[in-house]
Image 1 (spheres, rainbow, N blue to C red):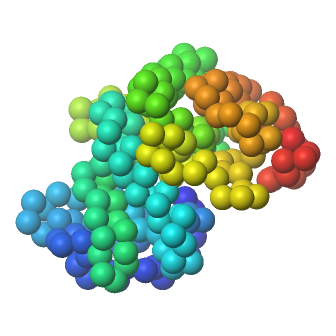
Image 2 (image 1 turned 60 degrees about the vertical axis):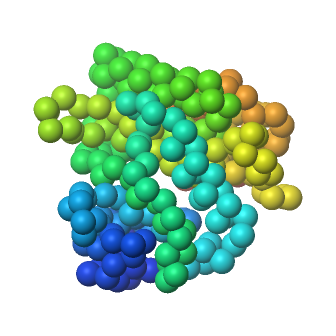
Image 3 (image 1 turned 90 degrees about the horizontal axis):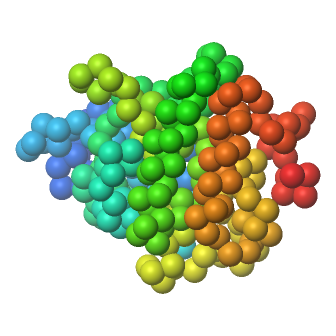
Length: 238
């Protein structure tokens, strides 16, 4: 999520949403959602408070996907997957998800600073995210958007870094009964999609493994394996 243009958001600073979450500040904004730092007025716990932006909050299919993300996060208890704390519907902003608040940087932000990672660090990240995706796969959940932006390197209180897989908004969870995509739509990030994903074929555990392999290559070399002068190449170009 970009931190640009954070002065305006759906939630008002100081206002209370979701039965007790008081907004402290807008932390990040992505294409579909906004993420806030909030404090629960009873427990005093600080959380990441996620709501859909104004455009997508009115799209039934996107709302269902956000509900699916909440259900998927609640179903998995893995040290390398961000934890959900609460979810519900607020009369003003609609669906919200309260998650653990992480302190650190995404792998994308890390690579922007150092360009490439030492082999031991890159392998540690890849192994822990592989374990996280394996945990998802055992539950019949396929992430579908593994990339450096969705892997967070956080600094817990004990000083040891840990890794968290974020954002299950694009996940495929057949058992929930939600259609894989809308007609004419492919969900995910083109640069990390497997061939079957781009061609809207069957998504399996191998599709996530393919994306993770791209990410490992990028961490080790500083370049995406399919480099292009275009920042966001089309499916046809890839």
